[in-house]
Image (tube, rainbow, N blue to C red):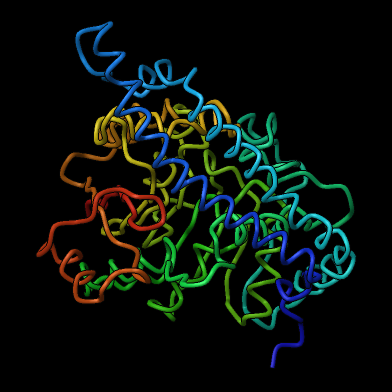
Length: 395
């Protein structure tokens, strides 16, 4: 039995807090599905025909769709609801986190001094925050990932953990999504059955959600997660200790990793690069290549490049660029992943892309067929499928 209590369990919402969180989850689902469908009808039946009348063609880019629809009442309602629902996600868990924060800090401190799980936590108080993290509250989350207001603070990690459940609708019934790491690790085990990574690195690991599941497929692998945010790393380490997961967490900027060349068999990330500037992305990819062993693999889950989806879907995805404090979103998506990989030193022979279903929501036989290239992969859809790009480093 682990001596340290699971830090997640300390946040115990009251009846009213839980009801509020359920409401926010349902509101987001309503906005992202029902109201969004109504907005699409308004676009198809009014906005787009008006654009065609004026320009003699349909909109060709997400920006053209955005400009055309910006004064439409349905869009304005949808956008306002979506923005407010996003703020409500974090506010719905704030009071319970603040109430239990002293105990969470105490548990995280105990975990940082525990070696029972075989992992470690290494923080760098002198690390300079990159501007794409430090200058804005990404995802409209107050304090972003890195703000600290007490010694040993874990509040941002806790808010991200529990607010994330509200955001993803984890509190709602019929939840089947397993997530990125569970899906990618299962895909790897089917697609590359002989690949048995001994050392796995995740860049931008936050609280470990997309690092821990690799242990389920590769139980003997050594896990390492890096992030710039100390509160998230403290929280991740406390989770690892309570679960008996031997993971190492290190506060580093992935643009300049301190690991030696050829250190890892597998390098992964999830929803990471669209938060970075394109120049920072190129530096991170170059670092990933440097620390990857010959014959090792790199797999990143990301949003689809704009060239792969239609103008309306580009508009829908890129809403976050203007309204969710993600100013690099569109610029990243405007680039071809192959070009970004080439700029980091990967050859065309090393590079690959894939689209896979979420392992929790897909029929197992279909998932296996997609992994083996025997079935048509799913089209992109947030939380129902995952777009991957990566490389197998030449031996």
